[in-house]
Image 1 (tube, rainbow, N blue to C red):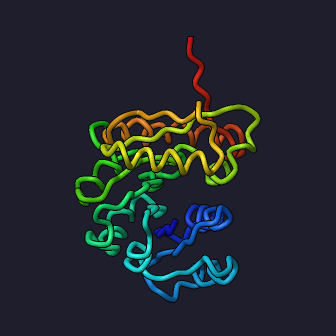
Image 2 (cartoon, one colour):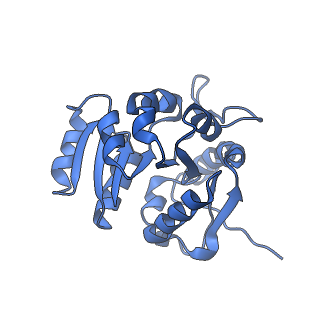
Length: 217
Protein backbone atom coordinates (compact mmCIF):
# COMPACT_ATOMS: atom_id res chain seq x y z
CA UNK A 1 0.00 0.00 0.00
CA UNK A 2 1.20 3.51 -0.78
CA UNK A 3 0.73 6.11 1.96
CA UNK A 4 1.05 9.84 1.70
CA UNK A 5 1.87 11.17 5.16
CA UNK A 6 1.40 14.91 5.55
CA UNK A 7 3.55 16.48 8.24
CA UNK A 8 7.18 16.30 9.32
CA UNK A 9 6.74 16.49 13.07
CA UNK A 10 7.37 13.59 15.43
CA UNK A 11 4.02 11.98 14.57
CA UNK A 12 4.54 11.99 10.81
CA UNK A 13 8.17 10.87 11.00
CA UNK A 14 7.49 8.10 13.51
CA UNK A 15 4.32 6.72 11.95
CA UNK A 16 5.84 6.96 8.48
CA UNK A 17 8.79 4.89 9.64
CA UNK A 18 6.52 2.27 11.18
CA UNK A 19 4.47 1.99 7.98
CA UNK A 20 7.67 1.29 6.08
CA UNK A 21 8.63 -1.40 8.62
CA UNK A 22 5.25 -2.99 7.91
CA UNK A 23 6.10 -3.19 4.21
CA UNK A 24 4.31 -0.11 2.85
CA UNK A 25 5.66 2.67 0.68
CA UNK A 26 5.50 6.14 2.21
CA UNK A 27 5.96 9.60 0.76
CA UNK A 28 6.33 12.24 3.45
CA UNK A 29 4.82 15.60 2.55
CA UNK A 30 5.73 19.10 3.67
CA UNK A 31 5.41 22.65 2.37
CA UNK A 32 8.61 22.41 0.33
CA UNK A 33 10.19 19.52 -1.52
CA UNK A 34 13.58 20.25 0.08
CA UNK A 35 12.43 20.09 3.71
CA UNK A 36 15.50 19.04 5.73
CA UNK A 37 13.69 16.75 8.17
CA UNK A 38 11.82 15.02 5.35
CA UNK A 39 15.02 14.60 3.35
CA UNK A 40 16.85 13.08 6.33
CA UNK A 41 13.92 10.79 7.11
CA UNK A 42 13.73 9.61 3.51
CA UNK A 43 17.47 8.89 3.38
CA UNK A 44 17.30 6.91 6.64
CA UNK A 45 14.33 4.72 5.70
CA UNK A 46 15.40 3.02 2.49
CA UNK A 47 13.93 2.49 -0.94
CA UNK A 48 10.27 2.54 0.16
CA UNK A 49 10.64 6.05 1.62
CA UNK A 50 10.40 9.28 -0.35
CA UNK A 51 9.45 12.88 0.29
CA UNK A 52 7.96 15.83 -1.52
CA UNK A 53 5.41 18.59 -1.19
CA UNK A 54 2.01 18.10 0.41
CA UNK A 55 0.56 17.81 -3.07
CA UNK A 56 3.10 15.23 -4.20
CA UNK A 57 2.56 13.13 -1.09
CA UNK A 58 -1.23 13.24 -1.45
CA UNK A 59 -1.04 12.28 -5.12
CA UNK A 60 1.30 9.38 -4.30
CA UNK A 61 -0.78 7.94 -1.48
CA UNK A 62 -3.52 5.39 -2.00
CA UNK A 63 -4.32 6.43 1.55
CA UNK A 64 -3.44 9.83 3.02
CA UNK A 65 -2.56 10.53 6.65
CA UNK A 66 -3.02 13.99 8.14
CA UNK A 67 -0.23 14.21 10.72
CA UNK A 68 0.03 18.00 10.68
CA UNK A 69 -0.69 20.17 13.70
CA UNK A 70 -4.38 20.89 14.08
CA UNK A 71 -3.93 24.61 13.58
CA UNK A 72 -2.27 24.00 10.22
CA UNK A 73 -4.32 21.04 8.97
CA UNK A 74 -6.85 22.79 6.74
CA UNK A 75 -4.17 24.88 5.03
CA UNK A 76 -1.91 21.84 4.56
CA UNK A 77 -4.76 19.86 3.03
CA UNK A 78 -5.61 22.76 0.74
CA UNK A 79 -2.00 22.70 -0.43
CA UNK A 80 -2.33 18.94 -0.94
CA UNK A 81 -5.31 19.69 -3.17
CA UNK A 82 -8.88 18.47 -3.30
CA UNK A 83 -8.24 16.56 -6.52
CA UNK A 84 -5.39 14.56 -4.96
CA UNK A 85 -7.65 13.67 -2.01
CA UNK A 86 -10.73 12.82 -4.06
CA UNK A 87 -12.11 9.38 -3.23
CA UNK A 88 -9.22 8.50 -0.92
CA UNK A 89 -9.28 7.44 2.71
CA UNK A 90 -7.99 10.43 4.66
CA UNK A 91 -6.86 9.36 8.12
CA UNK A 92 -7.00 12.38 10.41
CA UNK A 93 -4.72 12.17 13.47
CA UNK A 94 -4.64 15.88 14.26
CA UNK A 95 -5.82 17.75 17.34
CA UNK A 96 -6.62 21.44 17.60
CA UNK A 97 -4.57 22.68 20.58
CA UNK A 98 -4.29 26.33 21.61
CA UNK A 99 -1.16 27.02 23.69
CA UNK A 100 -1.59 30.80 23.64
CA UNK A 101 -2.40 30.84 27.35
CA UNK A 102 0.29 28.33 28.26
CA UNK A 103 -0.03 24.76 29.49
CA UNK A 104 -2.38 22.93 29.57
CA UNK A 105 -3.65 23.98 26.15
CA UNK A 106 -7.26 24.54 25.20
CA UNK A 107 -8.31 21.43 23.29
CA UNK A 108 -10.94 21.10 20.58
CA UNK A 109 -12.62 23.38 18.06
CA UNK A 110 -15.97 23.76 19.83
CA UNK A 111 -18.60 21.75 21.64
CA UNK A 112 -20.67 21.52 18.45
CA UNK A 113 -17.90 21.02 15.88
CA UNK A 114 -14.55 19.31 15.40
CA UNK A 115 -11.49 19.45 13.21
CA UNK A 116 -12.48 16.11 11.69
CA UNK A 117 -15.84 17.54 10.65
CA UNK A 118 -14.28 20.69 9.25
CA UNK A 119 -11.91 18.62 7.14
CA UNK A 120 -14.80 16.53 5.84
CA UNK A 121 -16.81 19.66 4.98
CA UNK A 122 -13.82 21.26 3.26
CA UNK A 123 -13.06 18.10 1.27
CA UNK A 124 -16.44 16.39 0.79
CA UNK A 125 -15.10 13.87 -1.72
CA UNK A 126 -12.39 12.62 0.65
CA UNK A 127 -13.33 9.75 2.98
CA UNK A 128 -12.27 11.15 6.35
CA UNK A 129 -11.71 8.83 9.30
CA UNK A 130 -10.68 10.25 12.66
CA UNK A 131 -8.47 7.98 14.76
CA UNK A 132 -5.16 7.76 16.65
CA UNK A 133 -5.58 11.28 18.06
CA UNK A 134 -6.12 10.12 21.66
CA UNK A 135 -2.67 8.60 22.27
CA UNK A 136 0.99 9.47 21.91
CA UNK A 137 2.68 8.28 18.73
CA UNK A 138 4.95 5.99 20.78
CA UNK A 139 1.84 3.98 21.63
CA UNK A 140 0.50 4.28 18.07
CA UNK A 141 3.47 2.45 16.62
CA UNK A 142 3.76 -0.07 19.48
CA UNK A 143 0.37 -0.70 21.12
CA UNK A 144 1.72 -3.87 22.72
CA UNK A 145 4.09 -1.81 24.85
CA UNK A 146 1.17 -1.23 27.24
CA UNK A 147 0.48 -4.19 29.54
CA UNK A 148 -3.28 -4.51 28.96
CA UNK A 149 -5.79 -4.20 26.13
CA UNK A 150 -6.64 -0.56 25.56
CA UNK A 151 -9.08 1.45 23.51
CA UNK A 152 -8.68 3.01 20.11
CA UNK A 153 -11.56 4.99 18.66
CA UNK A 154 -12.41 5.70 15.07
CA UNK A 155 -15.25 7.56 13.41
CA UNK A 156 -16.25 8.63 9.94
CA UNK A 157 -19.19 8.79 7.56
CA UNK A 158 -17.91 6.14 5.11
CA UNK A 159 -18.28 2.58 6.43
CA UNK A 160 -15.86 1.10 3.90
CA UNK A 161 -13.22 3.68 4.78
CA UNK A 162 -13.58 2.81 8.45
CA UNK A 163 -13.06 -0.87 7.66
CA UNK A 164 -9.85 0.01 5.83
CA UNK A 165 -8.65 2.03 8.80
CA UNK A 166 -9.63 -0.74 11.18
CA UNK A 167 -7.40 -3.08 9.17
CA UNK A 168 -4.54 -0.62 9.57
CA UNK A 169 -5.09 -0.44 13.33
CA UNK A 170 -4.92 -4.23 13.50
CA UNK A 171 -1.76 -4.16 11.43
CA UNK A 172 -0.22 -1.68 13.85
CA UNK A 173 -0.98 -4.11 16.67
CA UNK A 174 -4.18 -2.87 18.30
CA UNK A 175 -6.31 -5.65 19.78
CA UNK A 176 -9.58 -6.24 17.88
CA UNK A 177 -11.62 -5.91 21.07
CA UNK A 178 -10.16 -2.52 21.82
CA UNK A 179 -11.12 -0.88 18.52
CA UNK A 180 -14.32 1.13 19.02
CA UNK A 181 -16.29 2.50 16.06
CA UNK A 182 -18.08 5.56 17.44
CA UNK A 183 -20.14 6.24 14.30
CA UNK A 184 -20.11 9.25 11.99
CA UNK A 185 -17.46 11.94 11.75
CA UNK A 186 -19.40 14.17 14.17
CA UNK A 187 -18.21 11.82 16.92
CA UNK A 188 -14.75 13.35 16.47
CA UNK A 189 -16.04 16.07 18.80
CA UNK A 190 -15.75 13.64 21.70
CA UNK A 191 -12.30 12.27 20.91
CA UNK A 192 -10.87 15.73 20.25
CA UNK A 193 -12.26 17.14 23.50
CA UNK A 194 -10.94 14.11 25.40
CA UNK A 195 -7.45 15.41 24.63
CA UNK A 196 -8.01 18.07 27.31
CA UNK A 197 -8.03 15.26 29.87
CA UNK A 198 -5.18 13.43 28.14
CA UNK A 199 -2.75 16.36 28.47
CA UNK A 200 -3.58 16.67 32.16
CA UNK A 201 -2.96 12.97 32.70
CA UNK A 202 0.34 13.29 30.86
CA UNK A 203 1.32 16.12 33.19
CA UNK A 204 0.31 14.06 36.21
CA UNK A 205 2.14 10.92 35.08
CA UNK A 206 5.15 12.70 33.61
CA UNK A 207 4.98 10.25 30.71
CA UNK A 208 2.94 10.10 27.49
CA UNK A 209 2.99 6.31 27.15
CA UNK A 210 -0.47 5.46 28.44
CA UNK A 211 -4.01 4.91 27.21
CA UNK A 212 -7.46 4.17 28.59
CA UNK A 213 -9.43 0.93 28.66
CA UNK A 214 -13.20 0.55 28.57
CA UNK A 215 -14.69 -1.74 31.19
CA UNK A 216 -18.31 -2.74 30.60
CA UNK A 217 -20.77 -4.61 32.81
